[in-house]
Amino acid sequence: MTSLTEFFYCDASDSRNGISHKNILLKRNIIAYMAANGECTLSELTKELHISVPTMTKLVQELVDDKIVIDLGKVETPGGRRPNIFGLAGAAIYFAGVNIGRDNMGYVITDLHNNIIREHIDPSFELQDRPQCLERICSNIEHFISGCGVERSKILGMGVCIAGRVNPATGRSYKYFTSCEESLRDIFSKRTGIRVLFENDTRARCYAEYTCGRSKEERDVLYLHLGRGVAVGIVAEGRLYYGKSGFAGEFGHIPFFDNEIICSCGKKGCLETEVSGVAIEDKMVDKLRSGVNSILREKFDRGESIHIDDIIAAAKNDDNLSIELIEEAGEKTGRAVAFLINTFNPETVIVGGNLAAAGDYLMLPLKSATNKYSLNLVYKDTKFRVSKMSENAGALGAAMLIRNRIIGL
Image (cartoon, rainbow, N blue to C red; front, side):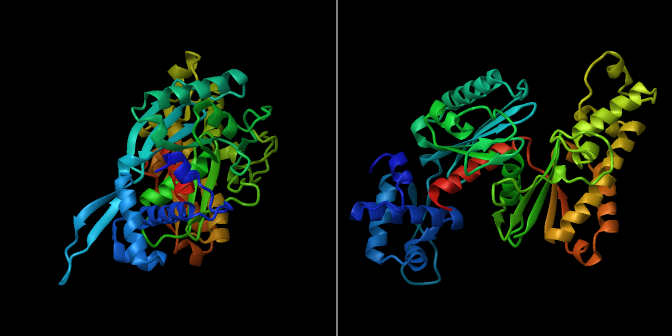
């Protein structure tokens, strides 16, 4: 067989009409079917892909010889001849995922089955819009790929996600490193020699949540990310929704409030100015400065920064001020979520990000306000759940998205 890269990057629109080229495309269809549906027999493949039995038998055997597909032996049947069942070999092909967060970088290596083979989080990283930071990101990615224990030629793609506005079609961030002549996607690809998909971090997390945690019947899901910023990922009819330019989901920049607080986007009154992790941190500092008591006062008096994680931990230790600030954010978020569910009528709203760790301190006022301000017919059909995925969900989602892109899902 040609190299894995040539095999999977063969363009379906290629003008070549040779038998070899057609067989490559048919094999990719077989792999995509197995990835979506799991183990199957030759009979199932011929029926679903409309390929003759002799051709299917030949192509599957070639995939077995290339160690991309495994012959799992005979399957039990009520009677008659027992057919062989086939499945993808997870160790044949790998994908990388990278999450460039505001205060950490996360990495994963996944196999064909989306199993995590390697995982690492670097908490020492801080995202800054400077050339030196971009160079560090490139070096960090290269260091992880080189030391992950997987042969680079078997890593067929890398998904990279970052906070802020991202256009996946152009591979550019419109918040960070905007002065670069090349897109970030092209920069990362050239530095690693691996095909790159560039994505927004909330959308990547949304996809990981939807794929790994959903019920089979769920088709319309909203993922609400409450971290240091606020955004939503949207799944409509089982697919991520991007909008025309890939910027769908900038929920935190809807002007819900009549205040004079300047948002990071340059506007006033955005949802982020009241309920984001940064907003809650600012409110805590203002309260402490004005003399309100809290178990975080000692930290404040020492001149140390107060992070949203500190406030959540204080709330769980019965700190009244921290509880009040989180509950206030939950109530205001609930009003905004009522707008979302009235608009999209989703089956499920998943709440993730740093603030999700506050549990009932956040969720009870959020759901109460959503119930109060949304249409009852819509609210009663919407399930709410808190994300149970790890901090590295963005990296996993990015790896899953590049996997789907390459194998044709």
